[in-house]
Structures are given as structure tokens and as C-alpha cells.
Length: 106
Image (cartoon, rainbow, N blue to C red; front, side, top):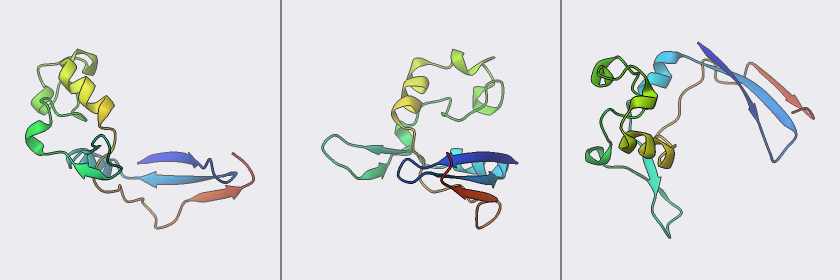
């Protein structure tokens, strides 16, 4: 389980949420999104444009078994993840609401 603190720039407040690692791994096996120049809409990246090893892969495992460290991944993979930070779909939280919220504190 992963716990994270989220902050808002629009209101002074924060929330603590929890996520299951398997749900995060499932999201990373999903589709990446991108914005094309001159268009504000986020659209799915075709799977044939996602490099190998796939961004989100763990070095030494699966299709990234030949790499001892993710910093050794090909430049194409590292550049792709820098330019495509958004995945299609959200990771569901453990609870339907945050574990803790506070207003007036960041």
C-alpha cells in the first residue's frame, strides 16, 4: 500500500490518500496520453508508438530483464516518459474518500 499527501495550489489544504500497489501497476500497464501541438485535448498514444522496454517497467524484470538499472534504459524510453507523464484513467484509492483532510494548512 502506498500513502501520499496531496496539496492544492488553489486552496490552502491537503489530503492523505492510500492506493494499492497492484492498482498502480495496472495503471502503468495501461495507455499513455499526449497533447498534440495546438490542441489542449489529451489523447491516447497508439501502442505501436510506446517504446520497449515500456515506461513503468522495472529494470531486471519482464521486458526490461536485460537492464540492471532504469537509468540504463534506451534514450527513447527515457525521453518518452518525460514527454508523456499522463496515463489514461485514474488509480482508485483504497477508500472512496481521503484518510485525512485539513484546510488552512499545506
